[in-house]
Length: 217
Image 1: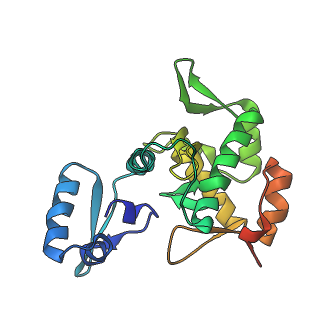
Image 2: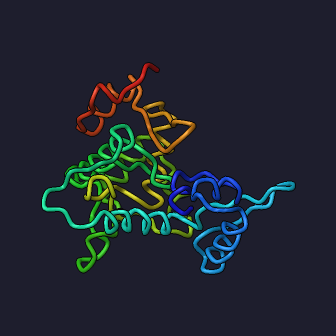
């Protein structure tokens, strides 16, 4: 049920029961436990109660657990469906091949730096990074004010490398959607790169995109 909420959308207990393949009563018991340990939040709207992940930190933990549950392999060969592997949402930021590529490009461009020498997975922005992200239309002050981790390396379960999580990752996805570089699939977590994104993202960031994962805009 938790993995069913990784796309950032809220769902009812009935919907989550279908996802998990259990009875509604069993789902309710588990959701009560998940709420008690603060892994999910509940929103009552009319006669329905909607469940969602308690935050981006929970999503990051789930992504990391996906790596562990895959088991040891001598050679990494992802079995993830191609579209889901290339670009998808991880709660509210970009994951998959595209997310990983963007993360490492931001590092190589010198836009991100380790927050502390002892922790290379938590990031701050460099002056050039601040200037570049603001130029994209990101309201960094608003995202810095949020009570959540600002920027961190989130382990990607299909790539076994890191994509950018936290408030900064969410801000970048918001910009990518607003600029129509990517569009959401309404039925799952897949993100499709538009023709506009195919033109602009390689120019802006130097990432390589596959034509097979683009869509007419």
